[in-house]
Length: 516
Image (tube, one colour):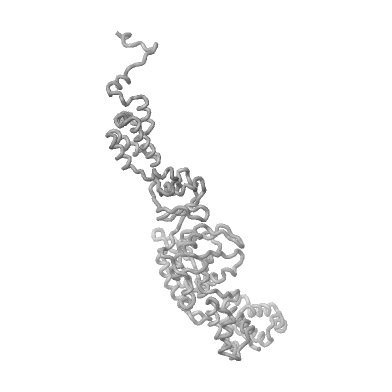
């Protein structure tokens, strides 16, 4: 058809070939266009008085706006179909809906309309006008694409007046193109996961997959088929019951949707903010949010409705529910289970128990501000409230071997009460043993060993031995045993004092008479 409206790819090719000197006939044959259509576009090219280089710098939307006003309108049947296509695009985002189903609906309304193959062909052509590089039908609730803008925004340091660059995070849902934008100080793990959390809260639900670029905050090692996701992001995905699908390196079409969103963000957010000054991230993000709401509420050119309208009608019902608790950033540490059935969290210098069956095994510690989890492989083997006391022990009775479980029932009060039944000196001595800075298990073993001696030597001898050991300021089982073995507990204080002062016999010692 003469004067037929052509897509942007053909238009750019037509103008490039013409400016390179090809004739209208050759251009017509090479591009498969009628000569009248070629003549019409070349005539418009001269009317607008642009060079090809100047046109190349314009966006596809700007070029289309420039040329479409004077092109003849399509015939009635084609116009009806073009008006039907926005409905097709919206319905295709719904689960189970296919082009064939929508074509059948079209045929019911317009029996003299196009056949199925022509319907699909014209829809593909119409779709390319929306995104010339690539058009994909994204299912509602399926994917959320995330990235950072290449260009930065700035905040001003109140004290120094220095301008500091800040990162700008962008997320977009595939089906509705509902967008979220936030400024952060860095692209680091904490800021990245924080922005992801705020995105999901903004949408009020969770998509089936999150598609990040190959950021260091997301991917440990890139790979075409199985990229290695970092532990924090995997834990985030587990918390929200979603999947992480990083884009492939050197495949820009994988992230075309979010890159197009970034370009729009430059126009609708960066440009309006360019003359404003901000002295904190909070101020900047407040202004970003105001512009973001306008962007999401603005009608899209092709769909004739806003992103928010499509989101509420099509995508929001397909999102999974948010979990009851918001995600807390977690850290990771590796450890080996000690022979005492405990692992050591070096960050806090604290010990936590794990089942004794894992003694000697290497495990993974995952900890947040409030809790610590211990994993062996993919299995969680222990969970504790996080305790910040240095060199302390957090122990669950069921984690210990049966031969040691009885010790988890012991405590300082029990040993002191036991010692009171033997004597005052024993009670004082046991308190001193418990006050020593050592592993609780070791203190309890020492106390039990000392107190059990009463069965062998009697209460009186043990109490006397504790009195003697208190004078020596030596605390433990061995000093008590030594005193009892040598019988020092039976000596009176004056006898023992005399014995300590009595000089030993030796030929080199002259004795007292030598000095008379």
